[in-house]
Image 1 (cartoon, rainbow, N blue to C red):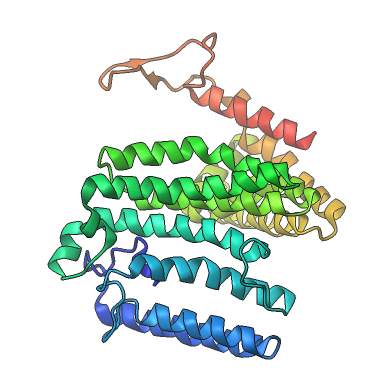
Image 2: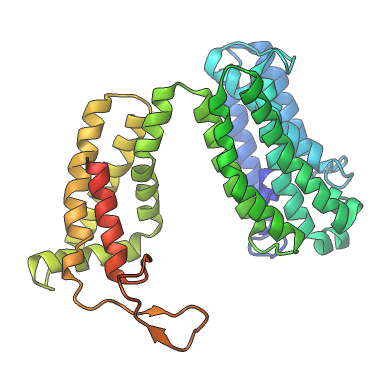
Length: 364
């Protein structure tokens, strides 16, 4: 059922239905195969979690129930991505079944905010796709409520998780939970876009907000040193992922930077590609192992070996002789080179300057 949270492959006909169906069935088989092993650890708990999750996911759109068509899509998504998901993770990691009292069971309590935030992705998606869903004869909360009440519903789905976590942070023994409030500006931005009807990429934006909210929640509930290691190494990890996504562009960039160092443009591009691939490996694996607490000193040393040469090769601000002009504010036809005395970073030099000294700080 996660494919309905924002994937428009069927609506936009970018993939034929048979491909989507086969992919869904492959996911079901893979999930059930994984559950078979888990059932040997906690048989009773695994059975009810897997059975409930599988039935809800299958009949989310499948006949004869079609839960989404009956207006039960929000409830289904909440259960699948909230309590059932968290219970499954708890069983897999502890081998025991958590309790069902939300006041006594942190697993169930914190699964509610996560479930509600996921429902909000679905709700924004449904609000955007009201016309298509109506033509298909579906019943969604967005259709039933209308635009005004849909906005109120969105606010409730977004505000309740904050209220629940902040309540625990104030009344409990873990004030670190209040760090989720750092996501509040992001939540307000998404809410303003919803109010004004700007739904382009809004499901993705609320999903990104939810990722940050969930990450901060997990870190606040984790060992403090784990949180510290995540903050120290997350930029390396995210940089490695981004380098994979932007592979073609970055290989060209590395070739250009190496040519600057060696003073020649005849360097084969495959050399830059090999070095770049090695840099990605030195970013990703040590950063993940560092965050998990495995040989932290060694992993930190490997990351240091990575970042020092990268800083002085890639962010070579001393090679930039002419600053690329920036567009002046409010104008798209005239260019204006901003003075470096202005506290902004509108030029290529300033961009490299910031990255260079950001890395220097990390090296320290």
